[in-house]
Length: 356
Image 1 (spheres, helix red, strand yellow):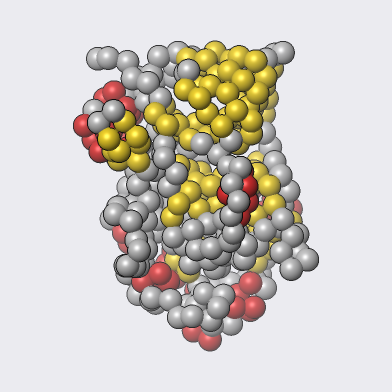
Image 2 (cartoon, rainbow, N blue to C red; image 1 turned 180 degrees about the vertical axis):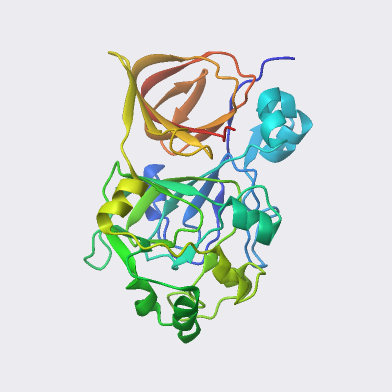
């Protein structure tokens, strides 16, 4: 089997129901403005669950690669050579699926109060092997209407399915938000949000999201911030307005319990004059994915792991496996890639797929 080289992804902005995106533009050295494309899906093999739109690109959400044969979808390249791209062990455990989705996300307004199914609910309700446990690594932030970046996470009150549905039926958004912890966030914070945990990314957050590879989002808000009615599907994902409440875990947390469970503490793995390697999310915390950071000033030799991964450049510029890269770009690293060097003055985040 021949060794494969990392592949640089093309930009892959995805439509969402909330405004944002200017910090993502600025990360890439571009002028921009907030709009309804506040996310970029990085090394994605997941199709977005979006309503039909006249301007929607074909196979929205799937990443593309510019090759000698033209522009190809990463998913199609993986399907054509799964062993080379994913590795035999990964295929044995997870099939011919990368198993992880990574995004840039920049919020100019609070996202809807929402929840994603855990693996059990995903199997029962969506016939899916993957739920949507996710994680947030805060890259930057901004004040919106004088308010610092924040998130809403977990119930701080006693909540039942019936009491939550009552607030939902009334569309008492303030009442639903008041049930949750409001947590200020800053650059470098890392959170994991297990499937079933209610949450909302607040305004002013620019983050890297690493998650299970689905787009199942149960929303408690029927309208966008302009008051425009959204399709019912974007609330219940086809489950209906009763069954959607089966996705929630109705667990009450104190703030101390919440932060102890969901806010992660990074660990330094390696340190030299040329590089610092930090584990931001470990497989000890979740088997769904892992996240590592390489801060390189010079050169770092990255040994082949036998796993596929996504490399995201969040600072500086240089080369990865001889490929010129700069801030805001992303590479897919096949399982069968040889050892390679990361060179320059740059910070790279490596997003790794699940383990058994």
